[in-house]
Length: 466
Image (cartoon, rainbow, N blue to C red; front, side, top):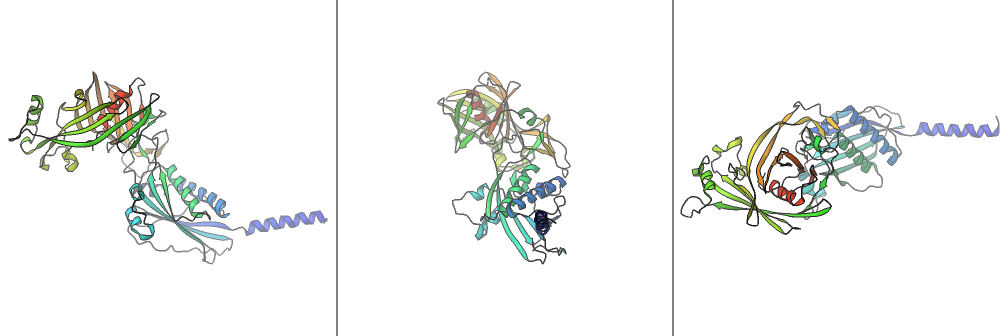
């Protein structure tokens, strides 16, 4: 053998022996304890598990130079809720010294409990607890073949909702403890970010905050209309909401609610318009009820115009007669007087007069609890654990009347009054997301003036629509 061939052979032998000696990681088990239905559903999905294994393999290679031995099989153990969490049993029997054995825990913690622990406390002025939807604690332990610990780290992730272009009905309760309402893609991205932090040798943080985009129910009345439509985003600081529309900046101030009693009985009775007095006296359970003007002052800042929204509500102290099958403090101020006795005033002039109906069921509009979406594209995810296939949309409030010389209506839906559909006549002109202030919206009629849009927002986003 020539001298040159001998050197090449030795180099090859060295490389082969180096490859053989390279350590690999065996993913033994992932344990999960969570009240979170989406999280546990995703961890049962084969494609999600494969994605997590692939991401984990890439992270271990980049951060620790350790590949996974198998990226196709993931063993997940779901711990019973309420059961005390004990240390994982290291029950592997593999004695191959080139293998490291990995155990990962996913545990969900209620934010208040997490922050009440001294080690996790934040300064009194921190708004972290207010923003936190839920907390995930992720633990990772690498063991050698003799079951001695090679790596043992823990990371707490404070999860809050992120801004999203999505418009629609938020899936379940949103991003809260016990309901991590996100898509499978967002979930795998969350896991990827978490393990990257966890295995990064330069990371010294035990607690990180992550904002993730919430998921929405699939539907046949919002997403098909807003798909690929440009979004207008609203920035609200305190009572001032600003946005750009038709190439100009807009600014409206939505004030605080006030209440004025309608004195129609007793010695201090006042005189009101005859039709209002008649409607009040004709109301069911009138004798034991009080009636109140609900008012909210608003302002179109750029046009220097002041508005007053005035609604009439019945306050009934006897819950026995509450309609719609529910009672409570919120209902007491949302039992609106039937008929067009609700107004938007521009200074002292009547701009709009309208009626308000509650719990109005739509015939054609549906949302689908067994499918979720990100709210802005056509990708839909199927949830195999959900048995309800479709649900009729119920408008929390339906407004109809006249604004200026235009017939108009507003439908407030989204389960918690977070979707507003604005119509002029029978034409849909705008869909907006938000409860008491607009957050984002889509315009369907480019001729809709910004002044009229502001007036519609003042009515639809009032503080009395719980």
